[in-house]
Length: 392
Image (cartoon, rainbow, N blue to C red; front, side, top):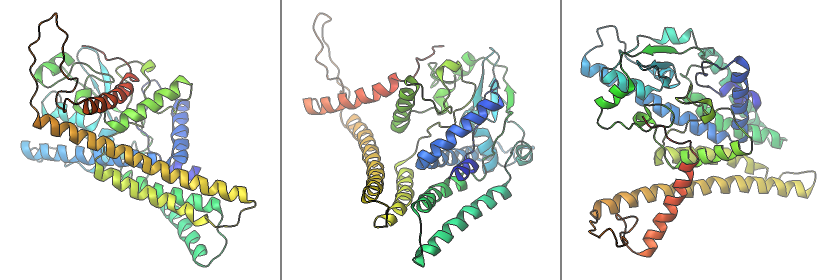
């Protein structure tokens, strides 16, 4: 299981001041996280694949609009999009700020004419990629052969141990990430630096929708969107930091800002359709463990412990589904009442206490206002775990 997870993990670019031991520790930590929670690696790989596909489509659409396909700019493929999205390029502005760019931030700067599109192709990426597609294909064939052999012995009613069933469940959950990361370069160490003859203030002034408050980089408003799962995840990670348990994959606030690298566990926003796909694969992964429900164990206590572990994992998975549905329903209710109920204008003297509801887009009843206050307090708790904003 460790070798399967180790060969699967594809990390982002390391920081400019990080050595080999730091990078090795971060990969070990991410591998252990994949062993403890393989569906989390599945979720990360799915989000990165969707983001890379979006970056590829954005740049190809930009080429079609500007008709630059005959001027040396090739059409982007998934390998180029993954490279741009894993911190393959870093920006150095005129005012001395240096920070990593993801694919959408790179497209934002190129489409607005702030920088020129970098000239690179798959050949340049292959010089930095440490894992060849042939090696990935061999690894995938090995784990598929193991799964087929276990299934064959099970069909012949031969002995299949619980350790083998556990390994098969990991394989089921690790095959989709291996396919999603098929074109992602692995173990790249040196990003390309792009110089810009403008200050960040000039970039902000050029865009009326730009937000000058930022957490990680001055271009957070382009692509850094917090959603319900990212809030839950960051709350969990910061809790572990307080008890001195760190995965090593997150960009910690103590490392300074702008950040020097894009964290490997950055939570990309997923739609409900994507989450249901994750649910189906994770359910298949956990269902394999139920095949040993009535197997022979050394003691009855071990059998009941195995059954309890199977049930607890399945229950936790569907509890996460309930939380996700609550988040989506809350967003829909907010948009619905906001569109149906116009903002309430109150004209109250300064010496009088305001009686305006805290959430004017919801009904003014205590039940609705109390429900919205609880949800807002939960989200605020997640936001408060983040470091303070930096104001321009």
